Image (cartoon, rainbow, N blue to C red; front, side):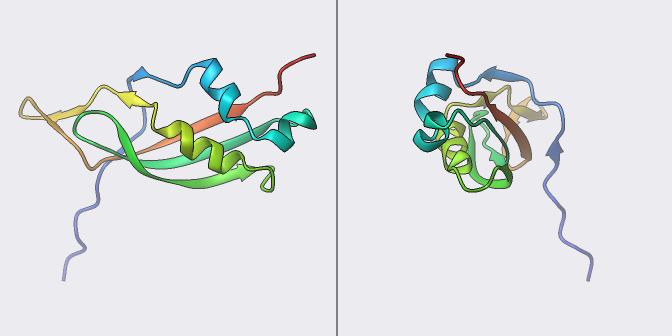
Amino acid sequence: PPAPPRNPVISRPDWIRKPSGDAVNRAYPDRAQRQNIGGKVTLSCTVNADGTVSGCSVVSENPGDYGFGDAAIRLSKQFKMRPQTADGQPVGGASVRIPLTFTPASE
């Protein structure tokens, strides 16, 4: 049988809302902040018809033992992109990868 159709992957999302710097600072893992350690996370999320994202999972996290992945998942609720449309109607179901960088606050 033919493979089921795969949902499209959005490679260039048009973000209309992203987490603020304050939101990123509030989500920053405590231990990493105390040790002045930064991190990078890539999330894979499903885009809903209204442009919000859900069902996010951590694709990569570096370093892996400081909680950056969990912090990124919490921040994912604040992302919103311009929805994809089909025949002029917003459609959901595509996936998007969201890279996040956590940079320690300078002293």
